[in-house]
Length: 127
Image 1 (cartoon, rainbow, N blue to C red):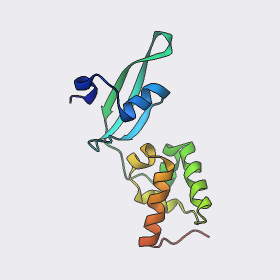
Image 2: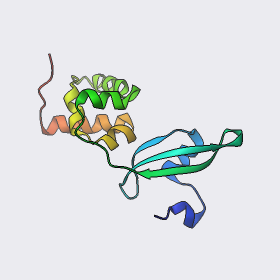
Image 3: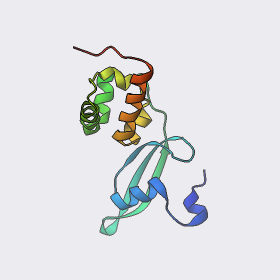
C-alpha cells in the first residue's frame, strides 16, 4: 500500500506524532480504519530514520483481565477518568470496546464511549 507521505513527502497526523515522540502506536489508522502497529526505527543519533507500519488483526476474545494487562498504565488512567465522572467502574466496560480503540484512542475518547453506552444500556456494576 502506498502511504500519503510517499505522494506528498510530508508526514501528517499520527505518523508525524510518532516521529516527534518516538513512541510506538497501536490502534486504528485514522484515514482508512485499518488495525495497525507503527514502530519508529531509530538511526544514529537517536533520530527516527524510518517507520515500520504493520497491518494486524487483534484478538478480540480476550477476557477483561487480559485486556487490563494489555492496556498497561492506560487502564488506571481510564478507570480514574470514569470515577472522576462519578460513574462506578466495572471491568465489563472493556468487553464492549475493540482493542484497537482501547490501545489507540485517548482515554478521554474511550471514557466518552463508556458514558454514552451507560446512557443507552445500563450495566450491572460490581459491589
